Length: 505
Image 1 (spheres, rainbow, N blue to C red):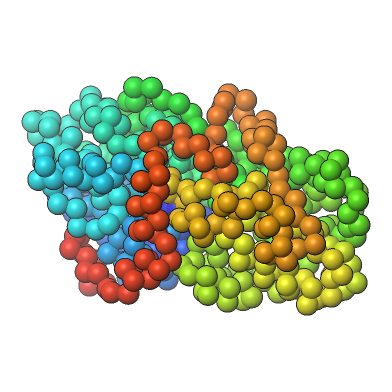
Image 2 (cartoon, helix red, strand yellow; image 1 turned 120 degrees about the vertical axis):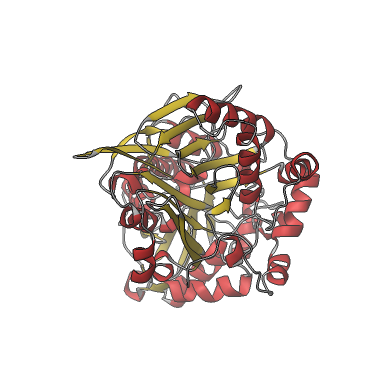
C-alpha cells in the first residue's frame, strides 16, 4: 500500500508535496520520496526509508526546486523494503520520465520478460513499479516526434492498459512536457483530482485521497475514473480521456475498512459515513443474533474502529468508553515484517485504562482481524486490566485470502482466517465470544454512500479476484516472495540504487 501525490503549479511545489505526503503518511510508513523538475529542466530527488518528517530536512527541501513534482510514501508489498526501491523511479528515455505508483501488477513477471525480449529493457529492482515505468516509457518511445501531444499520451496509455493487469494508480512526470496521472481499468486503487486558482493561473493536483487535496489548499474536483488518463501540461492545460477498452469500477473495499482516513472521500463515498454504516450493521447483527451476551460496555481499539464502536453502542443502548490509549508514534502493526516484531509493537502501541475494564464484561471492537496477533494481545491486556469476560467484534468479515492488489496481506497461512471457522479463531485469540461482520452487510454499508458503484473488490474475504488472472500458481509465487522468512532473508543485505541518486544526501 502506498500514497501518491503530483502537482503542476505556477510556483514552487516542494512544500505542498511535503504537506500532501504527511497527510498520506498512514498509507506508507516505510519510505518516502519527492522528485521535482527545476527551471533548468533538471530532476531533483530526495528519497529514503523512514517517515516523511525524517526523510526530508531543510537542506533537502531547498534543493527540491521547481513548479512540477511528484511524491510517494510506501509500505513494501511485492518488492523488498530496501531503500533502493523507494519511489519515485526514473528512466532517462524518452524525454526523461519519473513515476510513482500505488498498487501491484499481477502479470509483472510476464511483462518483464516481454520487455526484455522486445525492448531489451533491464529491470534493476524487484519492484513492479519499475516494470510499469518501463512499459510506459517503451510505449511513449514509439512516438517518433521530438514533441509530445495529448494524442501521443493517450495512445501510450491505451497500449499500457492492454499490456498490464492488476492495480495501479500512477502519477508520472515527462520532462519538458507535463504530468500524466492514470488509474487501472478496475479502479481498485484510489486517485483524485483537484485544482486551485492563483494570480498566475490554475494549478492542479492528483492524490491518493481527497484529504491530501483539501489539506494543501486545493479544491477537490473529482475522482479519476477507472482506465482514465489525465494529462496536464507544464503550462497548465488539462486533457483527459478514457483509455481502457472495458473499464469496470471495482474499488477496493478495504480502503474504507482500514486504510483511508475518515475525512477522505474515495469514489464519491465518505470513509467516515461508511464506517458509521458498518457499525450500525454490526450492531444490528449483535442485537439480533447475540442477544444472550451480557455486555456491560463497548470499547473500540483505536482508532479506525472508534466510529464503528460508537454506532454499535448506540444500537445496543450500551455505554461507549475509551479503554485504550494509543501511542501515535508506533506504525501500523499488521504490516510489520515478522510476528515477533508485531507482538512487541502492540504492547508499545496500546495501553489499557484499567478503570474501564475492572469487573466488566467488555465488547472490544476492531476494524478487522488479519493475522490475529494484535487481537490476541489486546484481549490479554483487557483481562490483565480486570475484565471478567472479553467479547470481540470485527467490522470486516474473516480475511481468508491474500491481497494481490497492493496491500501486504501476503501469505494465506499467515492469515488467521484462512481455513478456519469463527469458533476456531475465537479460541486462538482467547476471546469469550467473536462476532464478524457479514460480507453482504459490509458491501451494503459502503455501497449505500454511492449507489452507482455496483461492485467492490472483496477478494480478501471471498477469494474472487476482479482482474480474473490470479491463479494458485501466482499465489504460490507471491507467498514465496512475500512471507516473513523470505522478506527477512532478502532484506538482510543492503542494495545499491543504480538509478538517479540523491544530491549529497
